Length: 240
Image (cartoon, rainbow, N blue to C red; front, side):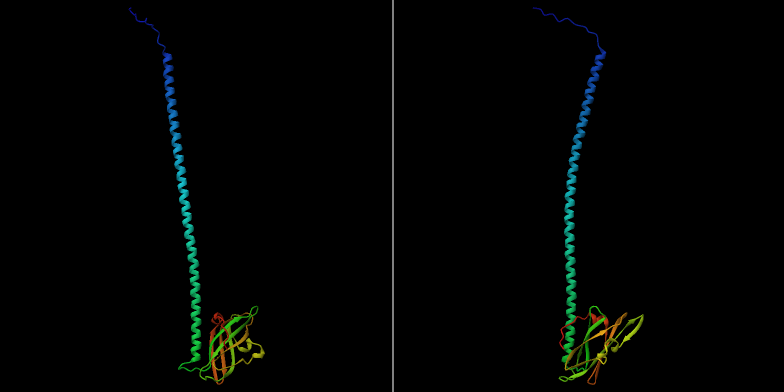
């Protein structure tokens, strides 16, 4: 059996249809490009956001570590400052102890005397204020080793130099005490004695220096003391 080819159909070319088809293809292609670009940008933004979050987390961790280090340094500095203050205070107390021991050594050395003999002498003078007044209590330590075992008697007075109304003024003993002790404070001892008394400073008077004088048994002892030094000396136990 012989097959005949199908008959040919000739159709006219529709150019407008071809243009629509080309435009449709171009539109689809353009839309695909836009979608691909949007997807790429979104992926990039997500990647950048994750990177920014990680960077922020890293910075926060570093900041916390720095804060912890600063706190440690500040604490160490505070501990060092307290230790330094304790050391300074301990050194100051040690210096005071050494000064006190030296004073005691000089005092007892003067009493023992060794090969050196001394008559009536003023060892030290210290002052303490009377609260709520311009009165001051004083303690003067007198010594002697030239007449061992023998009593030495006499009277003690002192005067105060200072400034009043812009002028240098010296207040004698009678200006500092009441009439009952106008002749001085009596003492009597063999080796040493602490003579105690009270003086009253006038209003507006600023003391600078004291002059102490002890007369007795044919001997006289005089000694000057700076007011500030006499006030600084700490009171010790009365051994008189």
